[in-house]
Image (cartoon, rainbow, N blue to C red; front, side, top):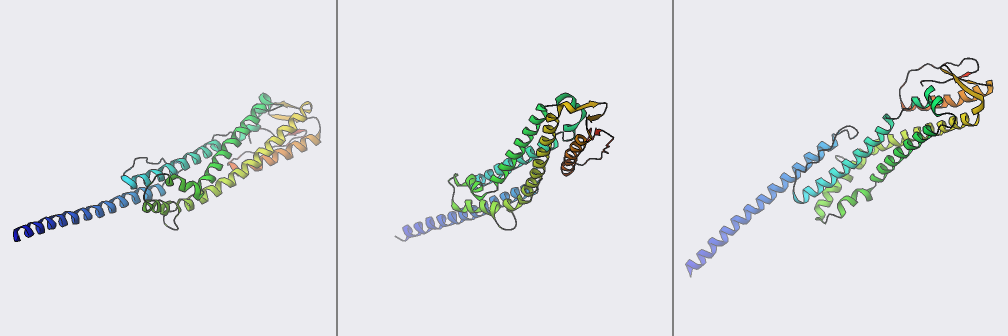
Length: 259
C-alpha cells in the first residue's frame, strides 16, 4: 500500500512539475508575442505612410498574428489612399491648364481640360472620402470583429487603434485628414475657377484669339474680366504649388502662359 501511495505521489509530482513548466512556457511565449507585436506596431507608427511601404510580414502567431494582420492591413489601405491622393495632385499639371498650348489645342470648348479637372476631382474626393470613412471607430472595429478571437485580443487591437495616448491610429491620422480636407477645399476653389474661365472663353469664342505668346480680346472689358478670372486661378495655384512666374498685362492682351 505504501509503495502504491509513493508511486501515486511521484506521478503527481511529475505532473505538477510538467504543469508548472507548461505555465512558465505559456507565460514566456505570451510575453514574447506581445513584445514582438509591440515592436511591429511601434515601427508602423514611425513610418511616413505617404512615402514608406508597410512591412507585410507577420512576425507573431495565433491570435497575436491575427491582430498584427488586421493592423497592417489597415495601415496598408490608409497608405494606399494617401499615396493615391498625393500622386493625383503631384501628377496634375496645374500650370499647364492655362498654357498657350491648351488655348490653341483645346479651346474654345476645353473638352479635354474639363475632363482632366473632372478626373482630378473624382480621384481626390474618392481618396479623402475613403480616409474619412476609415477614421470611424465602426470601420476600425469591423476589421477585427469578424475574426472570432478572444476578447483579450480584441481589446489589445483597440488599445493600438483607438487607445488614448501612446499608440492610437485615430489620433495619428487626424492631422493628415485635416490637411487633406484643407487641400481638397483649395482644389474645389481651383476647379470652380477653372470652369468659370473655360466657360467665359467658350461664351466669348468670337472675341479672342492667340497670337505669339498672348491672348488678345476685342474689348478692354473682356480683357479685364478675363484677367480677373485668371487672377483667381493664380491665387488658387499659389495655395497648391510653389511657383515663380511673372505675369504681364499689355494693352488689349490678357494674362496668359506658364502660370
